[in-house]
Length: 151
Image (tube, rainbow, N blue to C red; front, top):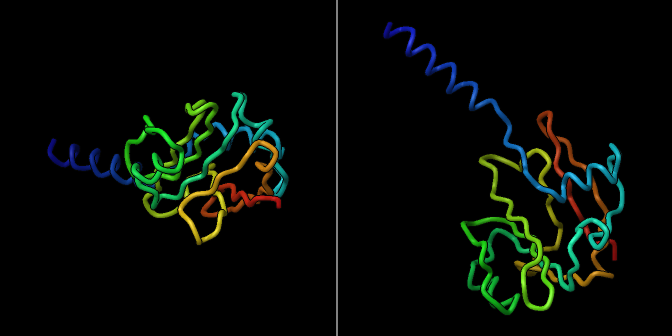
């Protein structure tokens, strides 16, 4: 009996370790649909996010809640922990957001990663500027999307 329990627990542990974390990103799902299996394409966030917005903020993991609040000009109500954040606002309110919590070892399958440079922990985009070159990066039988501003 003891041996059976140990075997079951060990099997469950090994199975859970082998599972690749997957992003729950709505934006990633829309990118996947728009790019239609291509490794590179272009995406316009104004057409990707259904809500009406006037500013798009991309924050690196290093941005604290205080920094986010300072940049957006009001209290970000969805802060839970360290994460990469995409925040869309309109008239001083969050209309859509995605917080991507870091994977244990690397990017998550389907994760959206913004290439905004190393000089700041955030970048602001207006609707006409939020056009990105998408590059699908494959790793360990999974992939993520790297987005670089097309300007």
